[in-house]
Image (cartoon, rainbow, N blue to C red; front, top):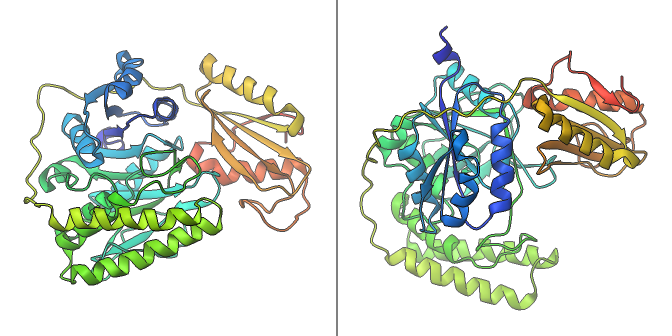
Length: 424
């Protein structure tokens, strides 16, 4: 097997707008990927590109776009990319170090044209999305899966494997041929629409469980920092467009079903304290207005994207191999994180800190601005969970459990040593 077959070239496309701190964090994590052949393409407005230019000398491509349209931004990134595959990730997400490696292995083993990985939520433990299928009504359904090996599902004729925009890989020539993401979708369902078009074109999508990203769900025009909705306009607009593109259902009946579904979500958010009662009717009004626009918008046919020429593949400088792991008790957390940050700055490549307290508190995982993976929580919570019943164990054994849990995603091996208190 040649190197090109084992390690195809990836273009990591990041669309960003108005979130410079999140973008800096995402770019740091992307640069720490354990993969030999990838470039980074950042698409956004001037505020975004000022962040990108901070490291542009290190091979990063910057593409200007003032339009608040996620599909257009991703298409511009696709056109400027030069890899065999385009890997899409959001600016408020960070990939595990072996993210591209597992996508590459999954694509090679399944011979698929696209792949989708798993996404963990803000606590870094629980999953936000895994394997889902999407129907012609735009509704996604979770499908239980056991195991870690990549596979190509065969969903029912009326459904497709659901891509997730923050963890999706598509062969670049296929994406260009299909016209990329449909620019009619400014936000929401742009990935679902591409999923359906890939299925209709006879292309296969692999599910790659080990290709993980962590999604922070940062504040945006659509939601606040507490994840409460600010508007449902684009949800209504995109759902109407999706129905027009892919379904023969009556639009009025489809709106009624969508409204009932979104109202239930809003009431649930109100119960959790994310919204006030008066917000529900206002937000339902934005859904209705968005649906009206989407139902009457002119929808031109999709055409193939025009390939860019004259700019070759611009690989990112490789981060040194290896992973520095520190285990500590709660009182040493700040010191351990500082030590790990200094190790990364000094050329250690990547670093993880496992900080456990003598409690049964839930676990959480975060990636710091200093480039360190930090996991905190109680020593006596069952292994691999955010919360659960009390389970007695030794500190060193629990550290080994957590090290094994993340090993394949983070690039840890049996020889990876653990320093700090109570080290095995």
